[in-house]
Length: 343
Image (cartoon, rainbow, N blue to C red; front, side, top):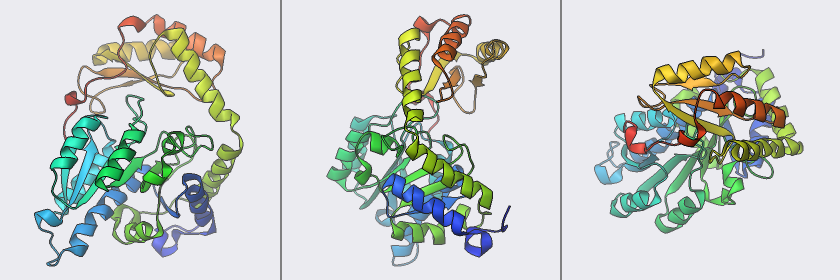
C-alpha cells in the first residue's frame, strides 16, 4: 500500500504529485492539494481561510472588523458547515447564512457587511436536492464585491463540463472560482479529496489545515487509480454524454422536473421512505431512503443517482417501479431552505 504517514512526513509520493497536477489541469488552477477525504478537504480549506484573520491581526487575535466574513448557502454540505463552525470557534470568522441559492438575499448580506475580507462558499451541485448553484450570478456578485469564491464540486467533477472539469466549466466561469474543493469517491470511484487553487493558497492550507496536516495520506494505489480515473474521464467523453441522456430520459418519462443526475424525490415521513426503498430493492433497484439528520423531519426522500452504466431500459424499469410506490404528480424534488437548521 506504500508509505503510511501524513503527506508532510512520508505519505507523499510521485503518484500523489501526478494526481495533483492532473486535477489542477482539469480545474484550470495553478496547483492542487490532495487530501485524505473530501470532508477533510473542506475542513482544511475553511480553517485555513479563517486563519488569515489571526495571521494578519496586529495582536494575534482579530478584532471584529479584522475577521473573515464567510457567507454560506443554507444547504451546504456538512463538511463545509463543520469547517466554518471550527473557524468561527477559533475566533477568526463571522458567519452569514443566505437562503438556498437566493442571490437577492446574498447581495443584501454582502452590501450590509462592513468587513473587508469576504468569502462566499457553496456546493456547486447540491447533494440532497440535485440543483445547481447559480454560478453566473455568483460570478457577477464576485466582480461587484471582490469576495473569495469557494465551491465544493464533489458532484460536478467529471460529470459536468465538456472536459469533465465540473460545474464551473459547465457555466464557463472557472476563472471566477478561487478554490475548488472536490472528492475522488464519487464519479472517480476511488477515495480521497482535493483542493484546486493557487500555489499560495496551497501553501497556506498545507500549514494551517489541520485535517490535512495530521491525517494519513491516501494510499499509493488509490492515488494511482485516481490519476488513471482523471485520464479516463477526460478521454472518454461518451460517459458524460450517457449520463445526461439518462437525465433527459428520466425527465421525459416521469414528468419530474430535474436538472442533474441527482434525483431527489421527497416522500414525507420515514415510514413512507423506508417502505418505498424496500420495495425498490425487491424490484432490483438500490435506492436509499434519506432520513434525518441528513434532511429535516418529514422531508424524507428517495435519492436516485444516474450513471453512465445505466441504460435507457434501466430508466424505464426504474420509473415503472417508482410509479408503484409514489405519485410523480404530487412528488416534490426540493423543499424550502428555511426548514433546514442554521449554521
